[in-house]
Image (tube, rainbow, N blue to C red; front, side, top):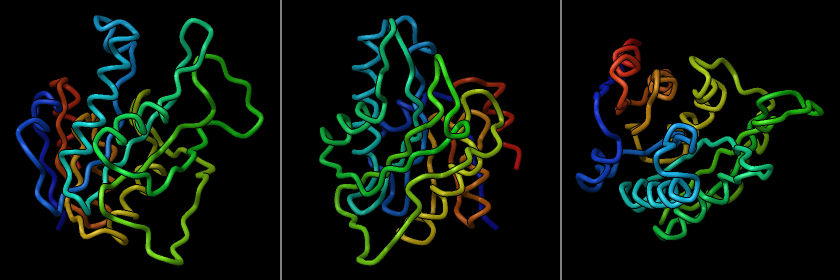
Length: 209
């Protein structure tokens, strides 16, 4: 039976402790500037890129790091988080294996502060996609969300399925696990899961299968 461990603490401190074991993959969604207001928008951008770089360096060369991110609008302009993820990945020497679009709302839906899609990007330093491997580029549904900033269940399952079937990783680490949506998806695919969450209430809830 797949295991689940949730630590109440700082995900960055967890990653800074050193490289993760070779069989560990990382899947997460980093907070946007509204959750780190003290940094300011420019400070948050730097923090975001540096955190992606740290996360990518934490996994083994042939393991993967997967990031689920929704763009945000600030001062009448969009902040492209997919671009920020790739800035951090490039700095870590990681390459893009795939980039999926996850529909948050049906095509044609008008939106304001959040787009009707999210990015999901998978990067690795050494792993390569097997010849002939085909995956879905657009997920038509986000799936159920445990809270407003959660990864949807369909996105979580797509990440877990890829890890289970196309990598040697058997443990999924989410350093910003929230209520544990990714942990649940990993366990459902037979993968062990480790979550780190700064908020005590969310960490306690994430421990529950």
